[in-house]
Each structure stands twice: as C-alpha cells, then as structure tokens.
Length: 139
Image (cartoon, rainbow, N blue to C red; front, side):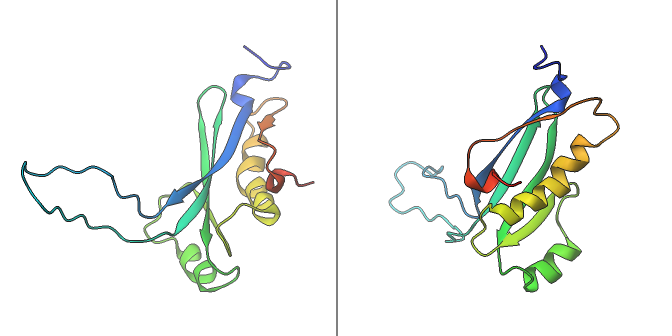
C-alpha cells in the first residue's frame, strides 16, 4: 500500500512519551504468609521525555531523549558530550522541565528527521506524521 505514491519506508510517525526513572511494580513475588514485604525503589519522581518514531514498514528511527537540566549547564556540557555508558544511535538534549518545546523540536528535526529524509536510500518524497501538540508546530 502506498499513500500519495509515497513508499511505506518513507512514511514515518513520531510522538513523545514520558519515561519515569523509577517505576515500582504494584506486585511482587514473596513467600506465602509473609506479613512484611520490602521493596527497594529509587523514590524518584524524575522523568525524561523520549521522542520515538517508526516507519510504515516497521523500521525504528533513532530515539531522541530530553533530560531535565539547565540548558548549557553541567549536564549538557559534560555528561551528554562524553556519553559514557549510553547506547550508540540515540540523540540527547536537555530542557529545564524535560519537555518537548519549539527549540527541542528544531533539534530533533536537525538530528533525526533530516538525516532520515535526506538519506540516499529515501527515494522521492517523505511523509512525517505528528499529532497537533503545539511544540511540534515549528516553521
């Protein structure tokens, strides 16, 4: 199936979602009859925003992570430059609330969408599908 004669490999859908640093389960395994069950958690309410995308034929595109930190602060200058321990093939940035906004959307376009759309394997037009979130509306 093609939409407007655009091959499925050139049609991509993206959206962002929050990822909590600590997601304790509401269930656990224990011996029957135990009165007290201890569960260790990070007790963190922190989260990051992750922009994820996939093409209509199922290819995943690189994730784009937005961490809560001061722009141009220590995290951005040191931690995200060295990327020690981070998997390769993902993109990172910071925002004071870890939210997608116009500036982060422009970074995403430069770092993820444009390299995909301008890749030699992408013959012809590409279609990008996003929801109507105001942070996506840049131009």
